[in-house]
Image (cartoon, rainbow, N blue to C red; front, side):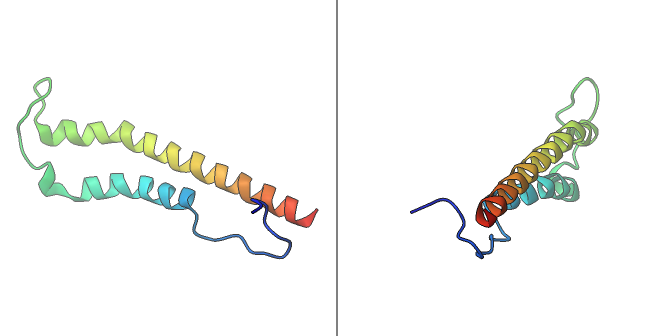
Length: 89
């Protein structure tokens, strides 16, 4: 079985890379909207209650998840372009 897409065949819209990218963007949103999971004072970190440092920790974590989603989607688009170019040749 060949990994190339036959001429005229459509590539799937939902791919594992796109699903993972969506989940990596959704995770920080869900984590911040689920307030009851972090609405407490202990444990403290450097004198900051958990409520504050937990939210601050999500700032760089969200950036990492966003970069991950970007890289996944970029790789997926490159694969789609290569498959389209290969199918048209």
